[in-house]
Length: 160
Ligand code: FES
Figure 1 (cartoon, helix red, strand yellow):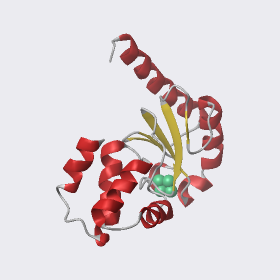
Figure 2: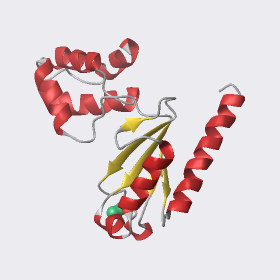
Figure 3: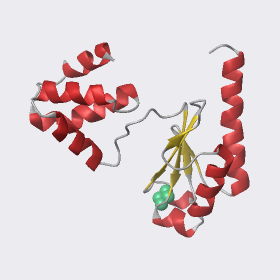
Figure 4: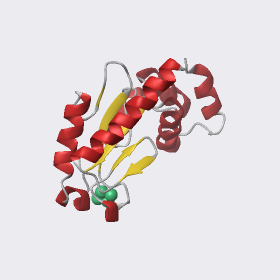
């Protein structure tokens, strides 16, 4: 983490106004915001940890726990909501055995909801990492998860 933070800090001046972009870059790099990273950002930007933490927890885009290898986001925007996003979410939760904002014990899957993926015409939608899956039904959602599980197993077998 130390090396990654140093590389990030090298691109900033270290001012209080840079806290949000520093948090964003750190999350991009580490996948989430560990407490130690937020402390380091505070020291670098000259802002108390409590303020950095306050800013980070104010915005829903920031995460404080590691995401799974397959990060599933179920869209709950209006278009997806009217087309059954709640049922899709319940189904995905059942399939993965976790609730929203949780990660499976093996670290393979994490689940989150988002306000809009930007593909409303394909509602209801989910994303798995950067792949969008639209016009979902429970059956299609199961297939998407099964495919990701299969890919995870294959990688494990291949020793990746
Ligand atoms: S509301 Fe779901 S993609 Fe826009």
